[in-house]
Amino acid sequence: MTGSVSQPRVSPPAAGRDPNRVIVFDTTMRDGEQAPGFSMSPDDKVRMARQLKALGVDVMEAGFAAASPGDEDCLRAVVGEVAEDESGPVFCSLSRASESDIDAAWRGLSATRRRRLHIFLGTSPIHRSAKLRMTTDQVMDAAIRSVQYARTRFDDVEFSAEDAIRTEPEFLAEVLEAVADAGAQTLNVPDTVGYSTPEEIRELYRFLIARIRPRHPDVVFSTHCHNDLGLAVANSLAAIEGGARQVESTINGIGERAGNASLEEVVMALRVRAERYGVTTGIDATQLVATSRLLSEITHSPVVRNKAIVGINAFAHEAGIHQHGMFADARTYEIMRPQDVGFEGSFFVLGKHSGRHAVAKRAEVLGHPLIGTHLTDAFAAFKARADEIGEINDAELTAICVATQPREREHAAA
Image 1 (cartoon, rainbow, N blue to C red):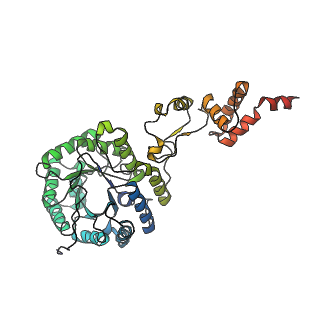
Image 2 (cartoon, rainbow, N blue to C red):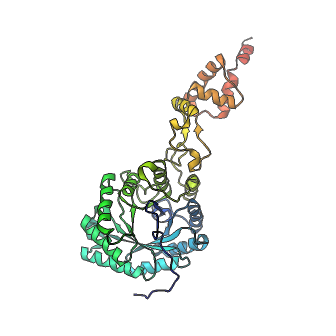
Image 3 (cartoon, rainbow, N blue to C red):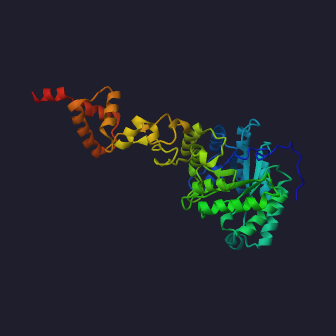
């Protein structure tokens, strides 16, 4: 075992923290990137890291150093380019419970004092038997030894009990308490395969916190949920209700299989429903759209139109009833302002579901006020054209307004 390396000490983000402040741990460049179709070059990761810093994430998991020499180099590049000051995020590398992985993470992160090691080790019966081929005693020993060694290199150590949700609760509690004794300050309880439900995960956190917190009052419980059943965001919010104060997530919800909890959805749920959750984050929500679009550009993966918070339909309205309500008061159909997440404003789409009021409003903006029979004729032509082509843009609407002008029709008849 290699001896400790003397370095200036830096307190992890948990130290002296507000108990109602949720630490936002972004793993877009690690868990997100390792999903098929989302690989990033070193330059891509530096661009993404700069934007994540502007977004205000607390912890940035920039890679898995031991995965390949290239991953270690990427970590080094991100740290070298983005960690300019002491006010930015903590930079993190994933690590298996082995000294060689921990050493690789140290090499990748050693240029910054704001660093964290994130150790994971499977604890569920299926992981112990099928993947690790280890007994419960062997898993416990490996977890303790890896954290003890990590603390010779890192002040800030997080431990993840992989597949925690399918682990026996008593054994899970024993492992987490043991690694806290060994020096881990953050205990992650990941729903690695997206198996949990909100009620189950809420109660599990309450059980674990009641069991471990008396001996470790300052430890931070973290949640990391996958979306295999479409419940990643709901489960993350339930874990926060259960006492988790770090949430691990990705931009646009990218990640293994069906993805991770979407950072933008979790953050805005906590903000919009602040009266329910009673917690805050340090995220600058006005950067969410820009961050989402940058990731989409880097990975060449478009965001679906109806994606919550950042999709182009999130603040778009076509139905006539909705458009009429929006003209009266945006709060009728929008529970947050588009400007709050980085959009310029709401967007009205003119199509076959639009009403007379919206068509007349847009036509007036384009310099073609519609009144009386002109409105009746133009609206009928609008509906017919919308049935043919779907969305009606400004050029199409202008053509309809001109073609249905009463004077032009009378002249044509003469």
